[in-house]
Image (tube, rainbow, N blue to C red; front, side, top):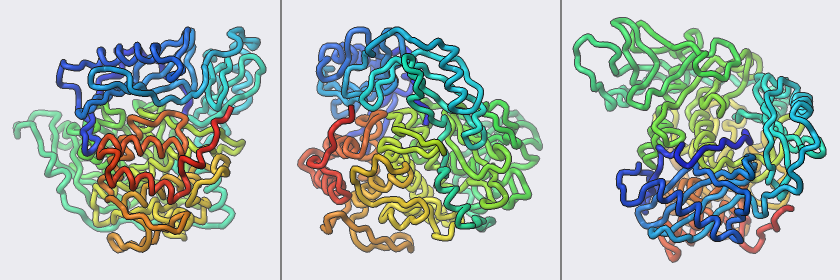
Length: 593
């Protein structure tokens, strides 16, 4: 995940200002002048400076609003990023909570310490920082920007540098390198793109000699998606117009799509009914510019032929997955697009050469899908839950910006916030399947079950440790801090499953589950709908970039209290589910300094 802080003024980025419903966590656009976004931002900023001991805001700090959420039941929340004397603060984000009357009620903050660095005088020049960053990431360094690095208990003057064309990153992607401006030490070196498959997993598969060649061409689904979308354009020959089309996909057969007709025999893989969401062909390039992708057209309203012999088959899977993910977030939470700003979601297929991965790319603001390496991975990674997983990283990027704590020399990421990010992507990715109800991709609590792996899935939520490939864990311990993020994700994924479905044996859609607990006790689930509403509310209101599993417990308890009350069965079950994965108030670790 990228660690760059985008500083904006309070007047920008608030088109998606949101309300949240008391029973579902639904987002609603601002439609009343009774409480305007600007008045809430002003009150939250004033409250932050009036309650400095709680918020950690101090002289020299400036707060820049990123999101405003106004709940019908009364609460108001403003998410801020921070600058200090004009320098972006890494790990300085916070959410200020207000009452209906705009009185301060609390704060959720990433940095539990003052962010003022010991010195504001850099010993390294910007050019020297760029050289160190280029050497660390083995690529081409961009300009160096002075920042305050307030992560992991620190508060240091540093340079942040984006290094492109990094040979240490799959597909020669970009990396964000933070260099101490006084000592010259590299404080962090993280990939900008989020990879679905970690370097550690790919290495494990290679050592096992495993070949992954998932089945494709699996039949036909009705045109319900496109038929329900319809066309708002008259039947007159006027272009462009919105029409019902189809995709002959690799993994879910023939599916309905909404496409754009631009001429009598020209159709574009673009959905005007979903903000202009579009899939393009990267043509084997490593571009991170969506505009450089080739527009995907067809002489009919059908795209692909269900096999890899047509370049448009993978594009049909991608467009279907992206639009279904958008529909899930819209119809479940009224979230308008990945960043809740009513803008298009974007995807590029055939990205790079022999790339066995899929990525969420915050630089591009889009999904990137490789075609597989032709050796270990034989097909593009365009299956539905991979898309739901990766686009959820985009949702996290637009909200809490959960980040790994550190990255090793092989590019593997570690730390609880990064594990929580992966877990949320799995949780909501599986929910996309349940929402879609495609008979060719049965909804389940398994992730990557259509990839063709020997163990029949990549990860699973009921008993994460059944994943032997990544060594995913079921329960929290202090060692989770040093666990690769995909493996560590099992802690909160397991808590979510227990909250939704409960412990013990259960069969859902023909899949058998048997979820254990750390203490041997039982958990009675509250249902997937309520569990998902709680986790979404927690993400959008009560998580920040440094939230760990114990912080996630607190966040979900606050969300359950908002939605159902502090004495509710839902609230009590949240507490029980976390205890069942060994996350309790009593074993909360001390803050790192």
